[in-house]
Length: 258
Image (cartoon, helix red, strand yellow):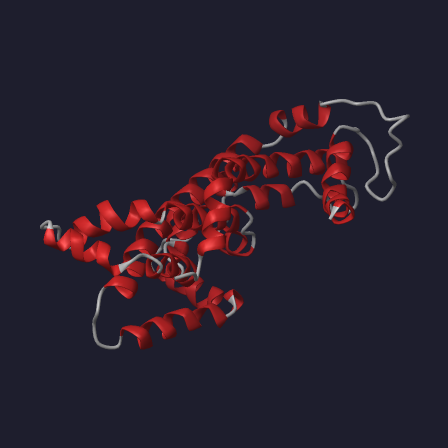
């Protein structure tokens, strides 16, 4: 496990050292004894480039996407897990089967649809297509199935309707699953490159992955600045994971258990 941990940490350590070594070459291992440590690359990242704007755009898109998926996913999962209606299981299987469709298949039709409504190159185009997800619904449904049905019956006896039961009984008990979904969705949206590349044209709306791609030139690249941008892009996700680690681990461990 120690060997595996070292192998996993090594690329991140190399990235950090390169970001603190202006003018270093990524193809050569840094010589720590001769390295001149400097934060000049980080200063250049925030003064000469639009990194604050890219960070803000990514935060807006990722937080909005995570919030929307928590809302839509939890409501859909509650219907699939706790309500009885004709065709419920068949509909759920069809919905989960959409995860088998590669995102590349729907990119072009989705782009044409948004373009026909004049919604390309906007926050709406970045957020709306990810407002719901079959994976989020699946994780939350599995968490709700693990809850005893007697809780719903007790809430009904006390006069609570489906909405009150959902808000006051079910949601508080699946907080680990909600934390898991929030981390996964935020991470996926934060690192998303293909869809923003297709739908965004103005520099003011570029997200962080698009901004980092502009740092690499055709003939030459300042690798210390590129690695500094990579470190900056990792920090928000790392902070989110540390804050939600307890819920994330519990959500993964409990998913699918009855």
